[in-house]
Image (tube, rainbow, N blue to C red):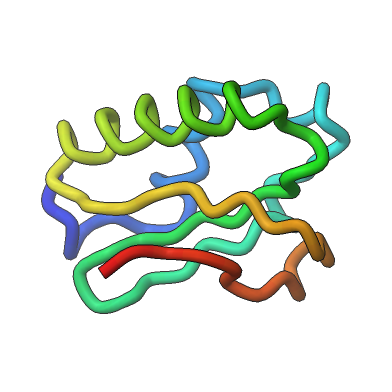
Length: 92
């Protein structure tokens, strides 16, 4: 699968392989997935994931996404508003 073929559901399925969303009080419909040209950003609440877990999850997510021809990252936002959350950090 190439990056151009990845859809929101594909990205959330990959994330679901790494973390049980329900255990963190999250529903897939509430998780923002932003397609930024050739990159994908997935926003999660920072309060639900300790800093060490954030780093580990981000690395695992990037690895899985790369295996499928995509390039992206997890952004852990402090001001979590579910689907209304805004991209907080990011990379270039």
